[in-house]
Length: 173
Image (cartoon, rainbow, N blue to C red; front, side, top):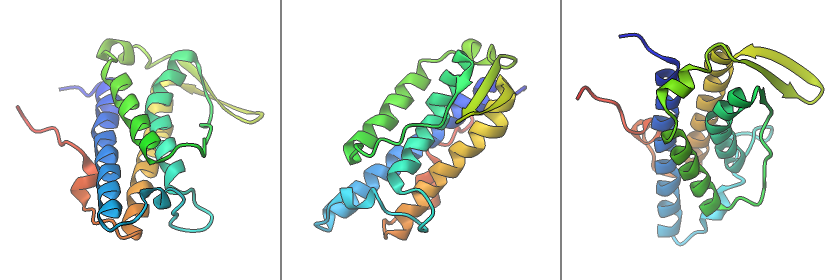
């Protein structure tokens, strides 16, 4: 069986976004159950120079839904970190990304393999081939930010395990 671009990206994005949705739900329930305010988690960080939970989730979604859209459009830029996202807004952001990615067909994503894309970082422009961008830049960033969001919540005492990060594993039918 050959692994396609769709398999390596969209199916992986969906699995891990399921984990992100789950760990956000678990964090909300944990903090609420202790009489706390889940919104207090949004600015939690692992280290002072790292992004807070809110930005980790935004970046995770951006490197999934936004990366595919960027290749389709031929340009990708860093996300706008909207500080107005509350906990419910982040949960909706993840749910909307899952819905958008679920609507993509393997044919549409696989067709992006050789599409030209420019990553625009301020005045800097970095040219990519679609598959190279998705597999060597976006997918590693996606997993970095998803794992860092998980780590932030663990550091804040949310009882999470590896299974909470992994999402729905794809077993043989």
